[in-house]
Amino acid sequence: MGLHQNKKGQLYLGIDGGGSKCRATLYDSGDRVLGTAVAGRANPLFGVEATLASILAATEGALTEAGLSMAACGDINAGMGLAGVNVPGLMAQMRQWQHPFAHLFITSDLHTACLGAHGGGEGAVIITGTGSCGFAQVGDARLSLGGHGFALGDKGSGAWLGLKAAEQVLLTLDGFGPATALEARLLAHLGVEDALGIVSRLAGQSSATFAAFARDVLETAAAGDAVANAIVTEGGAYISAMAKRLFELQPPRFSMIGGLAEPLRPWLDGDVVARLSPTLAPPEYGAVLYARQQLTQ
Amino acid sequence: MGLHQNKKGQLYLGIDGGGSKCRATLYDSGDRVLGTAVAGRANPLFGVEATLASILAATEGALTEAGLSMAACGDINAGMGLAGVNVPGLMAQMRQWQHPFAHLFITSDLHTACLGAHGGGEGAVIITGTGSCGFAQVGDARLSLGGHGFALGDKGSGAWLGLKAAEQVLLTLDGFGPATALEARLLAHLGVEDALGIVSRLAGQSSATFAAFARDVLETAAAGDAVANAIVTEGGAYISAMAKRLFELQPPRFSMIGGLAEPLRPWLDGDVVARLSPTLAPPEYGAVLYARQQLTQ
Image (cartoon, rainbow over all chains, first blue to last red; front, side, top):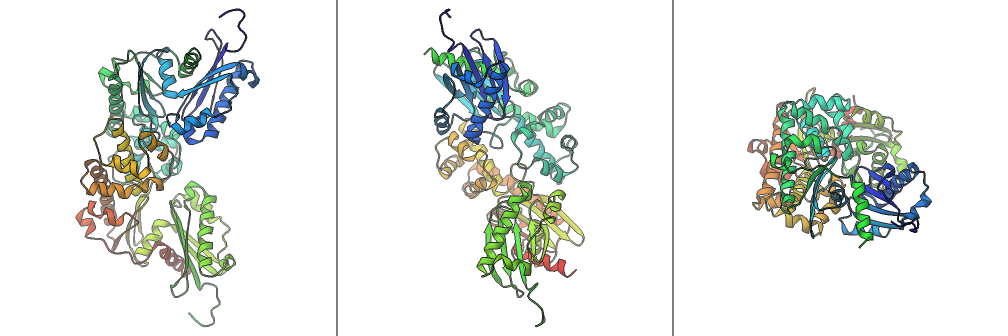
């Protein structure tokens, strides 16, 4: 970049908006992190207003950490990966936003995660955190799998593991299911004593509440509990099947992202694990790569 | 009742508050229906304020139909069966309500449904509508099963059938599940064209939205679709197992209540169906029976 370039375009903001949180990270032109911050969930499927509020809160936090005020937004190019914008109407609504940035480029959170994981190159990713989904981009081909959200899908995700475990424990407490160590684990985790306590703590709660029990389910499965093992095995089989569908596009790289990527590994097929490559950069940096791609097109 | 009895106590209001709606019915001392009305859901687990609002709205509707104003509440004895009050803290909150009635007696919606079904006598009931649950009262023994609510449990219920069907269709559309006639049925039911359409219409929706697809699932199963049949068979097996657990209390009568009681029958065990007796009165009349039992104790 030349000496005479004005300040516009030297700062890039990468925004990763998902179903459980929104992260914004400010980079300078040399890819150094100037500031980063996390705010609440940013999935327009559950409210465009709340999504915009989360995006702005994360942005303000990142700018504050960088010693900047929101007035600096006019000099910043932003890239944003957002859950839910694969729904055409929601993408249209997001594009109508009178945002404060010099430019804002929006794509799906899967796309930016994939770009980040593979340093801007082609590849496939599976994200297993609170939810689960898969994405691949190879040439002009794109494939997006799963990610249907809590209760409707997201098999193998943290929320799904927690939900299935809670279902099984409630069946067991009613006398319909086999004894399982999940029962004592869930009661202790929630600090309750019986089925009523479980229901009163979990009814109507969000995916994050169920995902908070996922590591207990994985540990209980690893310790040999048959009920927990059946749940995790089913989840792992789904994630493996998803990977194999993504491999049909012959992606040059494959990565897994999210809090469950590592702990789920023992339950994945060996030939899926064998193809794993480390992620090269986080999703918010993928969002910056996307913004740069769009600016230079 | 004597000629000199004053008006107090001559009118009884029966309230049936559940997870999808609240019905109030006003009876005179001769059990004639003077007015009835339905309002929104009344499950304090999802908000005590909203529950009270639903109860009052249904009450006002019933009184209006009877030609009375809310000022008449002071002369009315009310019985109320309410979802969620098996959670002790919620029952305590409901009992603190400064209600407008001469007397208000609160118990669970399962208890009043059972009292209504068996004309105030002992027995067992299974309710399969939007949700599913079972209850028996024989002597001092009470048994309450299921009813853990949408997504956590309620197997065999309308919401569960709809949710399982939607999950399967989304798996099929992603290439993970076998072909099923549920796919075309669900797309037509929602008026959408693909998985994104399904997710945008169902994500975050309440149990009632999923239950609205239950009859399609039952019809598809009856027409021989393997995927639909597997779902309904699993749901029916759970309801049959629930019935057999209730039978351990040796209830003199057994009834099934709710919109799915009839259509689910072909998927229940023959020895469960053989024990079915018709319901003698609706849950809101069971609530009146409960109020009378409490007043005369």
